[in-house]
Length: 96
Image 1 (cartoon, rainbow, N blue to C red):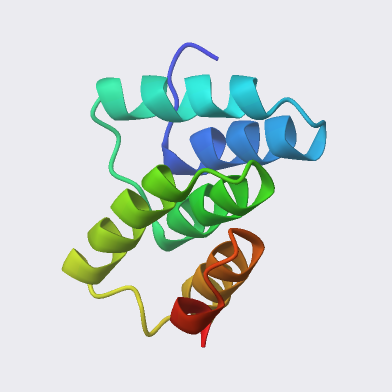
Image 2: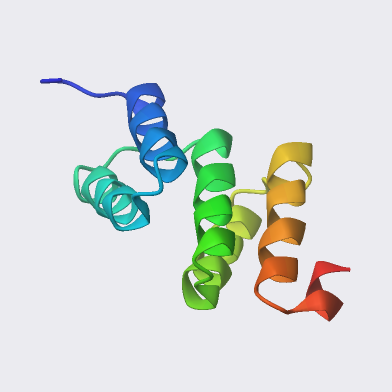
C-alpha cells in the first residue's frame, strides 16, 4: 500500500502476529511509529498481545505507560490485554 492509516497498520501488525512472525510485527510497529502514525486503542491492545506472546516485559511496560498517559487503561480490550501480558510474563501480582 502506498498510503496507510491506523486501520491498515493494525491489520498488518495483527496478521504478522497471527502468522507467528513476531519479529515482522515488531518491525511494522517500529515503521508505523517512525512514520508518525498515531496509535489507537486497537494498536495498543495488539502491542500488549505481542508483548505477552514473546514475552518482552520492557516493551509491555513502555506500552502500559503510554496507555496510562492516553487514559486508555479503562478500556475493556486494553485492560484485558494488560492483564494477559503481565500474567504471561510472570508478573501475577501486577496482573491482579
